[in-house]
Image 1 (cartoon, rainbow, N blue to C red):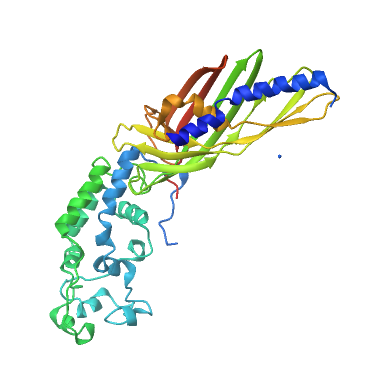
Image 2 (image 1 turned 30 degrees about the vertical axis):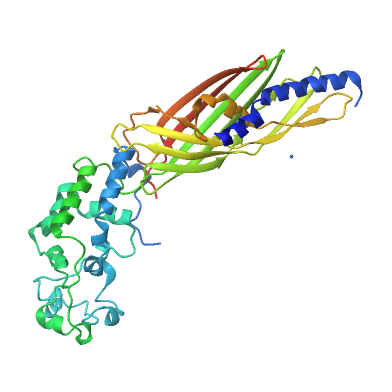
Length: 406
């Protein structure tokens, strides 16, 4: 609260100071003449769609991430591009040396005889060099339904049991091949964490987080969308037949924390039209400058019916107003901080050392896909009277989804 009080103290008389300045100029007039990684190719913008709420999207992303310790383990990643037995460097990375790409996969059985049909997947199914979201998209590409993906993890579709072999941790090597590995050291199995059944449960949880089946385009449930907050605000005060007004706005790119549902960000204030009544025959040049809007926390619920809370702090802005009058030297005065007047008007919204807003109007968004989409909106009106002057303000906050493009 002390920090808020300092802001309020610096700005509560902003309109009064502006109006007094006008009166002072008038008195002066009467008395004297006088400034990476390999990635899945992105879909076209018109192909991206996602009907999941922000909370559902985040649940999906986190559910998929729980499978990544297995997918990144050498028993999976080595086969999916980590060790390519057909490349020149295979002599140092593949125990059997470089293999002849023109010979069929039966050559692999010479060592990997624990599993009939041992083979390596093609380049499009490599894991190495791809981010988590790219692997998620890859899974949705090669397994066209959620049920198909679960069955692949559970039972390799009833085909060659590569995943089961991976969980044994023995690289499919028979006893003789195991004895000849690791420069004579005892062979040690190195399975990925957990079991195949546990991985299957995680696969089911991922699909369930998307509503029980894949949703939208391949990016949906895999890639976090970008979000921004826009604020537009204006106030006007009148007293003694004079008036003063100000407008400011900000567009704040929001960055998520580790939960993916709490965001922060800072952006400069963009000053709009400022006005003050000038003495008869004079004009006034308003040059506002500086200030920021800081989002200390924007919290989204993880439910299908989303709720939002927002905490912000504007910082002081300044600038000058210069009066131009006939046969008089120009007179420049400082503009008092816009943020100070805003803070004074919004005292009912103070919680701790920030300003808190909730009960946003959440729009029934059906697609968080490729275009800029309004997610939620809140308009706040405040009126106060100080020293015989009435000040009215309107501030509008809007959250925008910027789509699932990379």
